[in-house]
Length: 249
Image 1 (tube, rainbow, N blue to C red):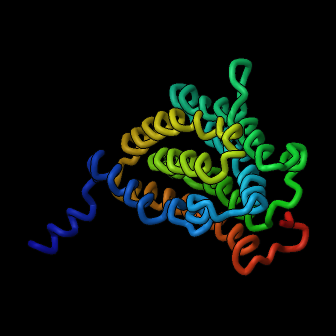
Image 2: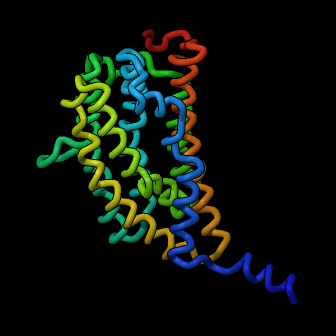
């Protein structure tokens, strides 16, 4: 009887609170707020040139976010879903009323001393950055729509990192203060997006197996973010070996 109870428990659907808690646990374990590169940033121990390398490589990720969201949007068969999700594309691409996240990130890159045209062109981006970001596109293109939506749920815990990052950038790198509009906007956008996505995952994961696939998709997204910082750390901190063609500090 005990064995059967355990098996039944393993197949039981997680409640909304349980699912949300497991998703948050992924963030606590795997989100890149604990990466050594971010820790150095928050301690004020990165040089201007190291921050330039970060802003340049992160731009490639930022520029692919609306493409990622457009892929997800194209896979949605429900008009209500599409109406909700297309907000994300506008948040990053902008429209007549807003400049969008990509342009805001270019302002941050410019505040570090980079030329915006260089950043847009991707000159000097690490190969590992491209591989990691392109794998994120592969996830949302090749896995189920449920998993694609779940992979966005780093937004569940990004607000805390954004708040900390803004505080520390202003404290240690005051010359960046004029380039922090991207983070200001995400303080409200990210929680709104997370609220919609976590409800979507809960409502559309009909089995425990589907819930586990959603949780795994979030793990994979966290790994992609971590891998991007691994590449930056290896190239520009320790041992400091940027590959041929990469940005030099």
